[in-house]
Image (cartoon, rainbow, N blue to C red; front, side, top):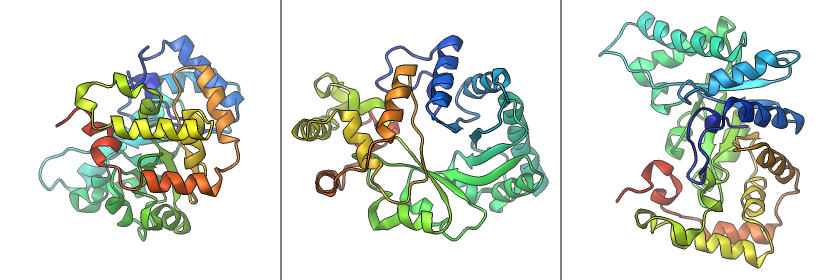
Length: 299
């Protein structure tokens, strides 16, 4: 389960904003009750780590049976810092996240900015492998926006996990079999943006003028769901659930009801090949200004 929305006002379709602590704990308890075993967070997600840590502290067995995925913020240091300076900066964030989360070890720790894989002569990644050897983190990985960056880590053994966006309209990581190739290389593959931050649940006619370029694609998706007598959530989840190579979904929720619904959708069988093929044809090459939220509202 993704927890960005527990620490930030997150998601284009989220009209209620960040939930209070009571509702946040209800969401987390509902997730565990549905069989969720992993929670995705980040140092940069506002209060998300602290809220998750509060949940872990109150839970019987604490963090037992749970996997926590968190992320290192972009490392910003001076020109050519010494390796020990990079290590000290990276470890500062790791230990602070561990403290916030009330855990001894972070199961999977990702570089939030994939450029850190190579930054400072590779010393961010080297620092993380050293911290892994110290037992503070488990698997080291990175979060990606672009397929070319993920291609470059296929043979990097120290990168054991990747998090990538994939959904009805974003097929960039599916093309050329990249998702499957990452999986075959032994990487844990986390699929995020399954509902594109809730965009799929919005009325395309009510989108702002700055997002007019999104409307035809959303209209097409709604039409396709109607043709097959499916809800938009069923269409979106069914498609991603049928992509080979995915290890785990990262899906957020604004309330406990959404958690239960998402759990039901994940348990559905894969989409039939005819509908999967139709989606693959309709949305094969959707522009990044539609599929990447940081571009929304920009000219």
